Image (cartoon, rainbow, N blue to C red; front, side, top):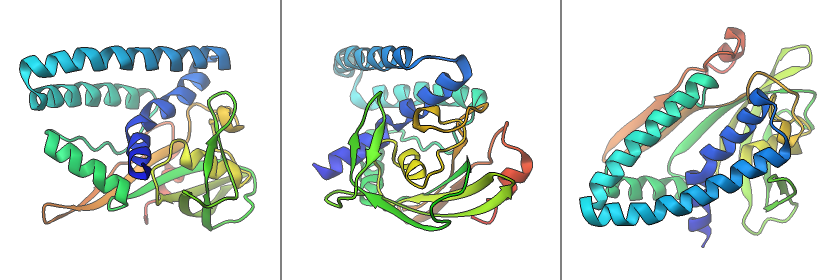
Length: 239
């Protein structure tokens, strides 16, 4: 059950990253964001029915390859609007299953960059705790440690009132990094759902994936896109 929850977090994180970006860029209300989430859930249920029929007709592997290509295109288009960072795509069912298990078991090491305003409760260390749903689609961190979200981080000053953060999630919970930053007293810049200051985008960037696959060591990096100032991106170049 724990693995299923973590894998689900990996698969659904993209929509939860896009929602605050859309909210900030288009001035959407919480009610409108809720409608988008509801529409997304409904469409996914419909797509699952269509996908099962398509798989029976064309085969699971062909459907997976086509769906992956379509998802990748949508991701790249979204990246042009705000920038999302590293994307890992599987081109067959076996690879998809292997990578999902690797994400869930912590064999894929992830690095994220973030920028936040304010002074954190601590400048480096760990943020750990169970997570539960809160209001308006948000999550909150608890003190309990039954099935905790675990995030290691460090930070450095960028300029007056702003800090750069490197984040290394050790679990795959929905909104994990956004909740971790809020718990430090410094919501991510642009993440208005968690109290962050309004900005051109949500300044959370998937910068690096490191893992071993079929005997080969993979180290995949993505430069921070605009509108990240060059100095901000340079702050994380030693990751």
